Image 1 (cartoon, rainbow, N blue to C red):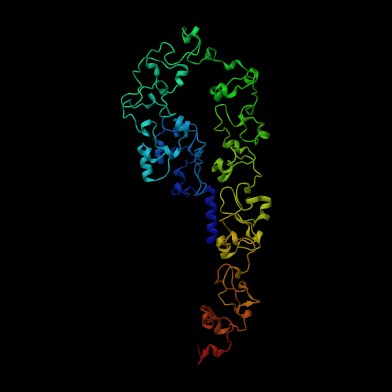
Image 2 (image 1 turned 135 degrees about the vertical axis):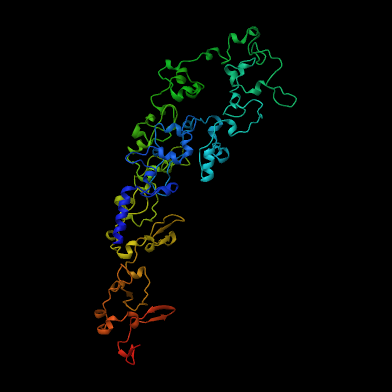
Length: 551
């Protein structure tokens, strides 16, 4: 009856809970805690999430980072998945694929090359609510940072030039002062002058040996000659340089902006920022048409196919199916797109990072998108060492396992092995019978892998002696083997089905019927092991009775 009730309870719980919560939310597990996160009759809207996650609730305003930009169009559960198991990842976050622009803080210049952990570290966390959270529950977080330069960087000028570093400096580098407005000086930097390094002009040094940025001597900048030497003949030296040239370039013709839209190709997105020479590469012997007339029907006319033809058949090299003109990444191939592919994601696969399956080889820049098959073995190693090759031939790992979780496995033990799991056997763990074996001991098996272990499932004995020791010291052995099932049942060791009237030469009738077994079958010790003597036992009265009384 207890087994039936346990089965019913397990069934009812499974109807309400799709699976165990992650370790972080383990305290909310159980059928009585559902409304802690769920609203009755409605989908999870995220409001209850914010009652606990105050570090997110306090930043739900413009400038608060990533989360304020997504809550207007998404719910928490769109990114954070639960009920996938204790050890499952609740959020498939890939720092390499994350678009930092969504936080409201663009990673430009040197910031683009900085590792995430160099900025997202405890010493730079400024927001008190996040500091309190980390102090209470130590863990890695990307929350709590501010966006001012001084929040991460030390002011090398000690406040001499104010607190707004961007007035002079740029994210491209400390020495890059392109943000400095030179037009406020006597000489506005226009054209090519805006690309010249400061030290190219500011060569004078003060008494301390530092470059002087103000009060440069001989400041006559009416024409180019104070800095540039004329490369023309004497006849034109008297003419001002600006009569032919322009700060935008040496050749006056090149200073005129060219409207590329007048051609058959309109540069859009990232193409609008590409230098002319990137596409129109001049070279010795190349004609004007060879330099400026280029094919443009497909992306691969200019760009290398990074996928090495993996999508030629599917998309006919139409890169726009996954990419945009604004940039190669992030891709527009979404989770919904994957669900329409020949391999839709189910179970824990939905929380797996793309790179975990689509590996990037060390010898190539392309990712793997084509596989030898759709079976589990295309990505996963056979931890059973080929023991179930016959069963896996038709259904693969799905014969026993599901994508929701590797354990528990659904294995029809009686149908596939001929050995019924009855009584105590039904509650025994698999590994109590199927012992772990190392690759070296797995004779006849494919090695599970160097250093790995597997469990032996094949060629196991189905007799009791294959797993259990004989406590009777072979008293009931026949032909070198003991048939335990003649007396014992799988339900319990003490559940005897031994019939003394038919299985022995001594009938238990009369007064003998109420005598306990131990009063006739005494305990003995042999070779240091204690056991009960069942045979041979004398059937004579005097062997038990002496003086008219039982011994």
